[in-house]
Image 1 (tube, rainbow, N blue to C red):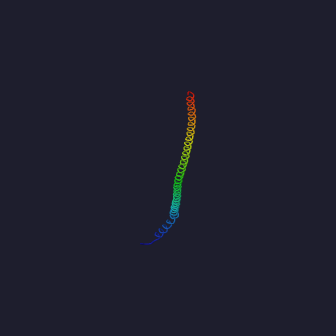
Image 2 (cartoon, one colour):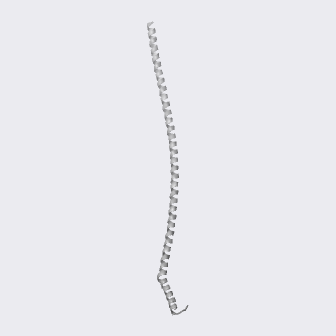
Image 3 (tube, helix red, strand yellow):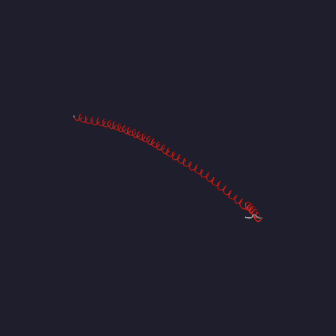
Amino acid sequence: MEFNATFIVSAISFVIFTLIMNAILYNPLQKVVSERQTFVDETLEEAKKHHQKSEAILKDKERKLTSTKHDAKKIIVEKTEAVKAEKTALTADAQQKAVRTIDSAKEELQKSKEEAQQVLSEEVQKLSQSILSKILGKV
């Protein structure tokens, strides 16, 4: 193989062409690819952060929901117990009133009985005196 001026000119032309292509095409293309990669990386990182935030929010909501359910059950149990206690108190009060009413009615019946016995006793006395006066009066 012979080396002549054409080879040197071709080699220099190739080097110049490579430098020009590097300056015109390769560097801007590499810059665009680099910017694109940076954009993709930043977007991916932001998406991860948003995903973590959404998971944290979801866990917080689930925790609050569980807490609210627990509180609701606790309130229901407390209210049920309060209602049972009130029911027991009202039942006891009603029983006491019923006992008082029954006792009062018994007392009234006893008084009525005593009054009726007294009236009957007086009537019996009057009747026996009337019978006695009629028997003694005819004799």
